[in-house]
Amino acid sequence: MTWTYTLLFWYSENKRLFPWRETKDPYKIWLSEIILQQTRTAQGTPYYERFIKAFPTVKHLALATEDRVLKLWQGLGYYSRARNLHHTAQYIYKERKGVFPTTFQELLALQGVGDYTASAIASICYDLPEAVVDGNVYRFLSRFFGISTPINTSTAHREFKAKATLLLDQRQPGTFNQAMMEFGALQCAPKNPSCDQCPFVSNCVAFNQNKITLLPIKNAKIKITERYFNYLVIQDVNEKIQIEKRKGKGIWENLFQFPLVETPKGIKNRTEFIGQLPDELEGSLDLKALTLWNKTAVIHKLSHQKLFIFFWVVPSRAPLEKGLTFRQLKNRAVPVVLQNFIENYFEIQT
Image: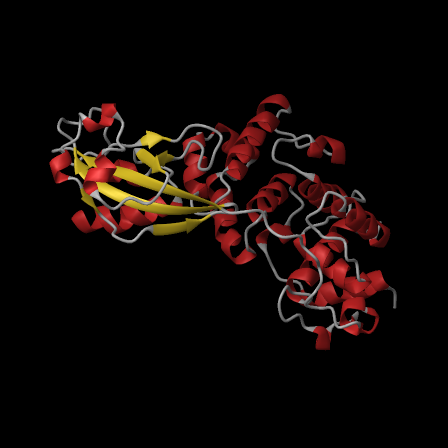
């Protein structure tokens, strides 16, 4: 029994059933792959189903507003994926008349599509011999072949892609790629892999050399930056709330938020915090009524940042002309940490 046949037989017996495995529609495969980047399948599946219901075709997604796309994406994180998703849908609809590219290089040229996603679409939808390499494949190949190249180095992708390409079943590359990823996810799991039931265990270098917990190798993570966010929850006499769209290329681009004051450290003292306020804000607020909602910082962890978040509640001296009602606020796309606050604070008031 060949290595490839063994893998495909295992896959036929053990694969999980997902809605994107029931189609070769490139739109649906592309959507699933973008959602599942850096997202667990259990978390991503409901988002996939909501997106397909809201936007059954690339045309529906292209014609949606960015705000609606971001709202549906809310909670998944890495919001640049959603913005790229929307941009690419518009490109395919407007520039390609709704027709997806059919070659690997054309797919790779799409915004937000890298080698992994292009390979997945090319192999699954068009049976092109492009090997997929993701975290599951890295782990499986590293352990089986005893590859010690750190998987987060510049040379790793080329090395593992070449190895996966040599193994690739040219007759059914899409099925093979899904089998590789599924085996890494279920059998050769990051922790406590099922080595006692593994069909490859007799030739697995990591198992036979007692290196299961040592492979794959990953270089030390980059330093985590700590930031201190102070959100001003401003309400007027009509219970309207001040909100703004976050600009710039940093985190949460184009999501809505309360006015934000970032400070070099955490501040709990009212007087000290008032001294940090911009002049244009300070004059419009009833600072005598300023209160700190959470005495302990809400900690929100991102890939390379750790945020310490405080919410300061303060009345506006005048009606907010562009303020939103609570109902309107609920329909805006906001970071999940703000969504949690909105549910805890405003819904108690209503």
